[in-house]
Length: 156
Image (cartoon, rainbow, N blue to C red; front, side, top):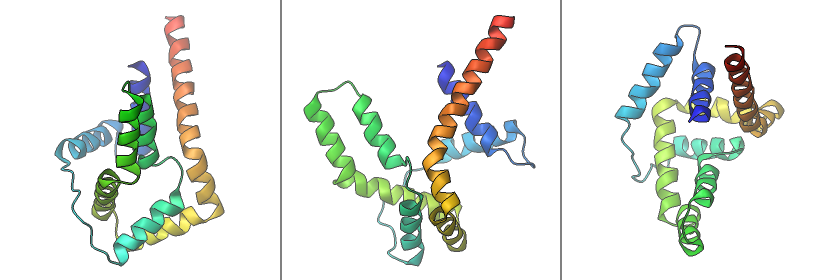
């Protein structure tokens, strides 16, 4: 529980802008999560969708598809069920529905021009380095926060 709270706090701190306080950012995220309705319908096969797919490919790194497979691996279920679920999310309808949902999310939050700029960034040396290192940086930041919190508790 402590790890999740600190991880969430780190995520919030990274998302705050100069114009928003942590509380405002948290409220915005909470509202977005509360009001989110999953859309797995077929996406338009247009330039925007193609560019989102290019961005996701260029970004690489630890993405939602990999996170799902990791989570399935942690589940306490028979190996045969895990294999079926993994197949569902890698080759089956689950992959198609998840990909559609993610594309709809990107279409809601970004313009075509913004996605093109992000794709260029993630194809750059710095972007590749960012994609490769972001999960590690986040986990190391979490570990740092836990260590600092532990020292604080010991001083009290």
